[in-house]
Amino acid sequence: RARWLAEGLRILAADAAARFDNFEYDVEAEIERYKGIAERIEPFIADTVDYVNTAHKNGKRILVEGANATMLDLDFGTYPFVTSSNPALGGVCNGLGLAPRKFETVIGVAKAYTTRVGSGPYPTELHGKVADKLRELGFEYGTTTGRPRRIGWLDMVALNYANLINGFTHINLTKLDVLDQMEEIKIGVAYKLPNGQVTTAFPSDISTLEKVEVVYETYPGWMSDISKCRTWDELPENAKKYVLRVEELAEVECRYIGVGPGRDAMVVKP
Image (cartoon, rainbow, N blue to C red; front, side, top):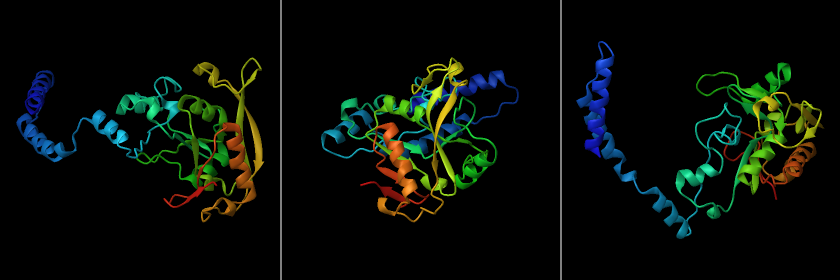
């Protein structure tokens, strides 16, 4: 395999040198550098399909963490504003070679509000002072670029669509504390289509999604700091009502509730 890599690099370097003037690249030095890297990572290379399935057979606990989000899934997301892979649950089967019946728990992670990076339809998007306030409270800026993230109210139509795709057993509702200072909180519960029809089904085409009008429910905020709460009973009544309404709309238990940035800032609902 080292020979294949060396031959491939030499071919690529020769091609680049033929196409670009003053192309300078020490391919032999690069090959030697990769040999050193290979020695370092060799102990971590394995037949991962066999490794993971053997671990499962032996009763080991396997934790798989998804990346991006279902709405960015190549097949089920808001195409063409998607990533190039499958962040939804099916990507675990393709990526690890684990059969679907081996998944025991599927935890859907969702913020208590919503954000989006980059272009694409965003029905519950907020603008103006409310958006700015939420963005500041939630530190919603790109980690590399520092670019402000788009921000909006929780969209239950989108969340329930993600649940249809993934089959959540529980929900981890994160960053509930970001809503601490909001006097009024909204939840998007349905879409009004251009023809006037109200639906809770997520539209299958972008052109329709871009034109929907969101049907909201409005709830009073709790106007208190919940970042020190560690039990369900410690949460303010209005915070509990918000979580319970999300549960009711999703028909999935919000077992885990994030109340701050720390690892211990979590309420586990009884």
